[in-house]
Image (cartoon, rainbow, N blue to C red):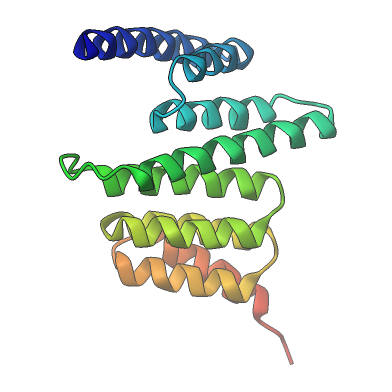
Length: 190
């Protein structure tokens, strides 16, 4: 009986996820948010649902012209990503070989939401957490951190992030370029 209930729950959640994906792919984030909230009413213990809800809120924020509504959606994205991270960390499923990569992806998108909301220090800290969760993908997370710091005018911190990116992947040419851009910003003529 318990197994049958789980099968029905998973089926219902997969239907909601599929509908939300179709809506998101077509830019209808309102429908995606509604579908994902509905999925959370079925079972609020699934990290993937919270992650996708965070994505829908984050992407919908880009379409907002009212700054208050944009901030509200980014805050909702942050809350959803934090819930996804919390659930993923609490899961003790050693059977999932990609658990750390998934957690790193959650951190990455959480950091992006922080960055879009102007919370640069929170974004940098969260990119660091992503790099720690998935050392194999650390170069990309450090690169993202460097880009956010560059855009925020924090050149010295950006250079340090690009150095970490280069240390993690010496073949990432974009990191050398972006580090150079930040170094040129520090140059003075005499």
